[in-house]
Image 1 (tube, rainbow over the protein chains, first blue to last red):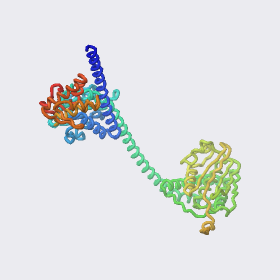
Image 2 (image 1 turned 30 degrees about the vertical axis):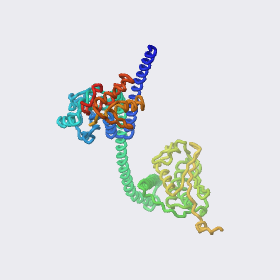
Image 3 (image 1 turned 90 degrees about the horizontal axis):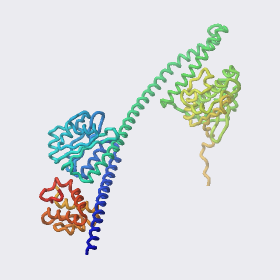
Image 4 (image 1 turned 45 degrees about the vertical axis):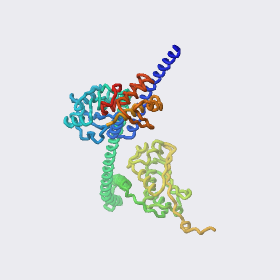
Length: 461
Length: 90
């Protein structure tokens, strides 16, 4: 009998021990499940207010708390973000209408807890909610909900004050269950992380808003600049054209005999005037491109004729520099689909550039057919380009390393050329074996379809 | 306002988390409690039925089970008629 009694006692002890362990585990499981719900609520919202309200509602309903409130540090004050009640959700005070509590307030318990980082308790709800709400308001609220005690818990990340969590209890603050104690201590860190995440998001949104506003302002300024440039360049063109005419008249001796010394001066004025005209033309192109007013009129264009006309136009300048400029293109052989004026401008820029950047040697204008395209190549024996230069060729005001050798360059020529070629559904490419080894600029544009191919093909049976 | 049956239900649910479905089977053996599926009703004095339920678990699992019962109803007690609550749960 004694043996059976002992065994029974041991069995009971083991049973009770097992129960105690299971009870502990049950609390852990419940805590984990609650934390998971809170985590989901925190992750589902990116705004501090919405997230705080969700968390407060979960805690209030889980523990039947008369009140759960959350205030967040905002500058030098605490601002209520959520006040939830288990019993009367509609009775809850509206945090939006609450006055912020200055952190320096010595009488409010929330401010004290936020400052000290130490939890506190009180049996007077006005200690917690006054001056955010009037004493009378808080008193009737407290009676209606049956708040007996309030716990004020700090929300902190390292040393940073994040806010406070207020737990309004319908019993003594000493009478918390194991589950409540575990859950509350776990929840505090989770809330801090969630608030910080939401704050980062809000701050990013604010920054993005500011950036957008700045960007809109910049666009507005850019449009104004384009408009100004357009007006200014149009105003410049007329006097420049008049100046050019008078220079030609002076140069041709129509206004009297010109001696050698005067001719030199006229030549210098003429070159400067040409440079100004080029710059103004480029600026006009730029304003048209940037304001979206670049209109392309596609028609069949004799590319060879245009190329050789350009070569003939630039040849005197090339000759003056001792450069052999050749146009090896048979007129009438290549008809492309392009805007004639814009194609002429492209070739003019490329040939003029090639002459400008070639101190000695030659410049050749070549053409070949590649599939349904024409490839126009302007090849020179000039300064050439480094790889770094090639990367920025078509940018606005790009100045390659060879530009130090050139007196006149707007930095806009290739930008304009690139945009014009693209507008005509073409492509441009540049090649150079390196500095001092010359360059080749190739423009690819679609050939015009021969009239025969435009006709409807007969049906094949 | 929750009644004594709510307290009994909460206690059994909490015990179920620790000992499993056995919590409901043991509750069926308590006089004054009527367990039907997972809902509970009380016939007779509520205080005695609740005290019987707590004692049932205590007899099987010792004082730790009483703590579990107390914790289970802590948040509800302030809203329940005091006359329905046995001393062991206070």
